[in-house]
Length: 354
Picture 1 (spheres, rainbow, N blue to C red):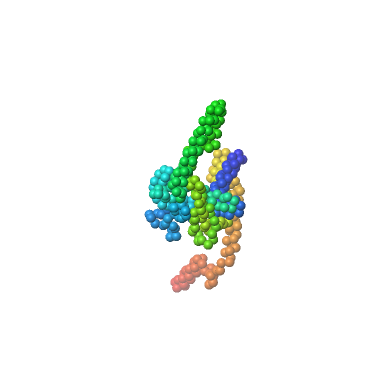
Picture 2: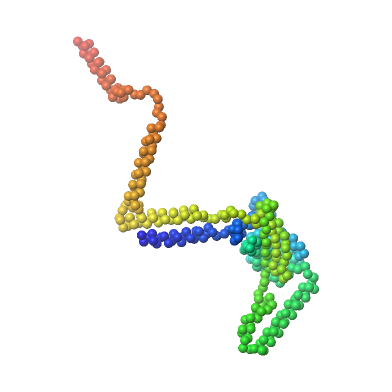
């Protein structure tokens, strides 16, 4: 009883771990919190080429493209995976992270990242969106504004920095006792972007259902960018964004979890019972098995049932038709006939001698 009491909590813990693993969503999949529909965008993922050849016949040979109307450049991106193009010298991205770039554009001979994997699938109400973050620094502008406008923006930022510095000096002169408290609040109230750290470009792809497109196809359009050229918005129409009711494939279902628990329980029952019967009861042979008497009775009962069934079925087997052996025609009959012949010969010999 003690062994079963110790093993039972361990089995429950194992069952919970298997159930948790079975509920872990696959990459690039999500359930709608409102309709409970299942969305899988892996059909839109462009797989890298192997030996410069497609893995499947219908695979794309390049990443997805979107024309940047009014931006002076085009965008290249992938869904839930890095782009398959070879990138070199991306602004603000280390060489070790180039393989994670999931969206980029080229501007004046330079390459800028607008997001890296891992991607994040989120729902905003009923709208499904894919988000990439940690791209190139936002101070790498992509803008169609004339240079003068961009220079005025820099001058305004510089003037704002000077006004903040003057304000800080005035605060220090007025109240020296509150200097520490003011220092803590100033970065939050209005310092420059350098005080708050480097902001990086990101991408938001809004997905919409289009049942007219074939599976694995998508129509991507550029919507716009934020005023600071730090966030880029796209809209993708695809059949994969329509959702479905099919459950995602999991490693182990409820039946698999139950089977694993049953196997572990039988193993503990068998090994623990053998150890108890051998060490405590000093049993040997088949009697080491736990509850040997019960299993032996069940075995003999099954054997008797098998014999009854086979004997009743043997009556239904047709027999061969032909002559049956007459009584006394066996070996005993042949031996008695030879004795009669010998006696007859002896009798004739005696009469001949007379």
